[in-house]
Image (spheres, rainbow, N blue to C red):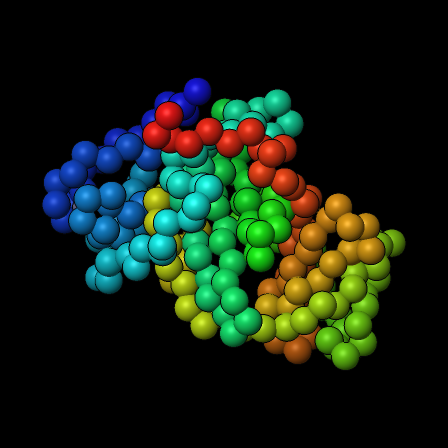
Length: 212
Ligand SMILES: [Zn+2]
């Protein structure tokens, strides 16, 4: 099942006909000329720099469909992050109910994050330092696993956020409950945004390649 388009535009750079599926789209990459169109569903503006498209992922392409909690979804876009220790993918998903999720992948591990783009928790804890190794939040223990900083990113497709505005560094945290994965984006020594997601296997998502 393909999602019906939420809007249609022609690329202001090359004239390619484009369909968008994200009602709150902040950005759409032209599949023909790789131009970045900001606010494509509102007042489309061409970004001065074109997108740097990440290398194709072996299992998940833009347009890949799947199912989560009996709801069909489609992959609309991807942000590929490079950091000091490796890389990470965040795919944006739209369900048939037009809900947004992020499917994150790091070292072959997948987790589903919701909602978009707000964090579940913002903590301002002057006492939280990575050296402390753990943090208790909502009665759950978060174990500190490491910190890193983003050194670059590339992206493709249609996204509800503008990745040009993303800032880093981040911390990697895990709940003692191994089904939940969390990561924190750090603004300063005292201000952290905590996102938590449910670990998923690709089999659970019943993915179907857009080429089939
Ligand atoms: Zn174009």
